Image (cartoon, helix red, strand yellow):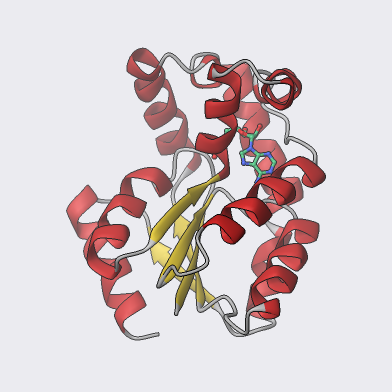
Length: 190
Ligand code: AMP
């Protein structure tokens, strides 16, 4: 079973690259951002609560996202592998994911860390905001906040996976195809 954690700052291209990896390795895509936006669109209580954090660029509480991932893992028990996109985002989430996966004896295979310069992130997100309609992609101060939250809360996860020898740094600048080939080569060698 192949369990991949796709890691990187907002705008690193995680969603775009996840599509290539899913097709190549037949994985189930679990994006907590997408799952939360589905809840917002359905106007559920969870969605309303999550929106108040997401619109400002803050993280949604761990208990909410861990609960969502837990139920998705239970729904897809026969999967041949997963790609976790935008999750985990805190060390507590990384620990919870390890516990959930270890219950089935199918640990994280590797963490793929996309490395992209800050100016490039901001320009990609503002570009996406013009078509995505996402409020958190349309305002530079919210984007800056998301990058700061990433640096403070999410970056420590790198050390967490590094300690398990699972952290693989991928150059995230260049064409979409070039980056996809780098990722595929890394995953093929896991
Ligand atoms: P994304 O689509 O991954 O860029 O996520 C959009 C927003 O959803 C983030 O800025 C957070 O507010 C929220 N979010 C997504 N995934 C998580 C997570 N794993 N933990 C906490 N908040 C999350």
